[in-house]
Length: 65
Image (tube, rainbow, N blue to C red; front, top):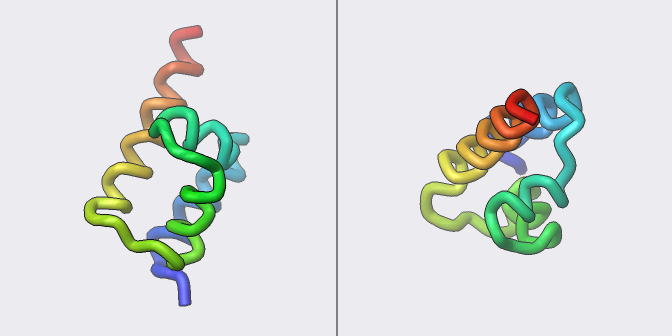
């Protein structure tokens, strides 16, 4: 079962039109890897913090462009 934070992040991604590809590019990983984390098939250390930071960085970049 996915963790609560993954559902919250997916909801925020939907609201802000941020894709798996956007997150993957920001983090330097593949879309598949992001998907595995969000579906709890992979649980790397600090995943919650790393994905939330990448999400925030994407929004910041969009505001400055």
